[in-house]
Length: 310
Ligand SMILES: Nc1ncnc2c1ncn2[C@@H]1O[C@H](COP(=O)(O)OP(=O)(O)OP(=O)(O)O)[C@@H](O)[C@H]1O
Ligand code: SF4
Ligand SMILES: [Mg+2]
Image 1 (tube, rainbow, N blue to C red):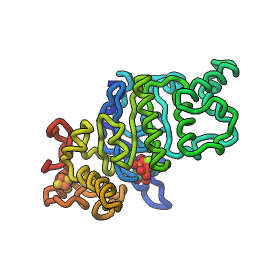
Image 2: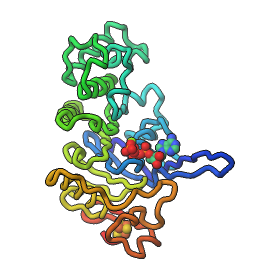
Image 3: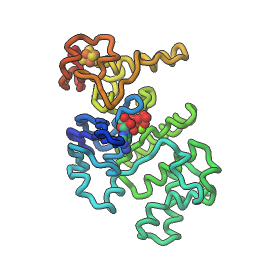
Image 4: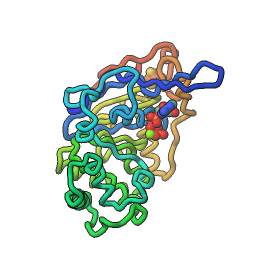
């Protein structure tokens, strides 16, 4: 396993005037791993903790509890210089993540400039090589980000992320801001790069249909907790958790009827999650036990599932 996340917790404390701070559990006891050269898709609705997870693995945020191992070593045992050579991240919004005042070759070579390991000419040549790898024409090198479409900007971001030859990419909603036709091109590029360089991905999306194309393993999150986690085929063809089933039903309805069936009811506040099973306020199968008792993670037909009745 290239990445192992063990019993990860993250709490935020929101300060309030003259009152006790509010506690928010963004991540509650997350454990999973990513195999070398494979993709783990992390899916869930807005606010379920996906970006928090990404930031913790990137070491932008610190966990409240738990361990993260990269190649069997604690991530915080890597130096600030070495970790970016291992793990890089791509963000959702290709419009705000690129410096508008810089030519794209400088954006792509930026990680090298920061380290001062290469001469300017070498940086330029490296940028050209990276551009070729992500399918950008080298004569665009002197252009600025605003001259590119969303899909091309995401290619620029991917090129920059790969400049230091990392082994692992965290992709936080990398195609969500793009048109559907362009989404497929960027996904195909990511798959091609993965095969070519044996990259491992943590691919975050609120959309199961996007994950279906790229993930080997799928982890379904709800209010900071794992609902179901297993191989793609099991999750898509034979889901066991009511939440996974509801997510799948909503993507199928988009395909067939062109409308989206939202999951029943409102997403509960993360400040005040339901007792017992966190999904119970929206679950059509909820019973008394679900309110009283938190389901224990169990292995059912080759996947992990947190439901009393799965
Ligand atoms: N710095 C912070 N301080 C306080 N609360 C935070 C902070 N960052 C995130 N949260 C809260 O943690 C929870 C998880 O947020 P997170 O951004 O990880 O969700 P997400 O799954 O990425 O959502 P989205 O799909 O909208 O990007 C949310 O309730 C959010 O409000
Ligand atoms: S434990 Fe109960 S509420 Fe939770 S998903 Fe299963 S049936 Fe639904
Ligand atoms: Mg997010």
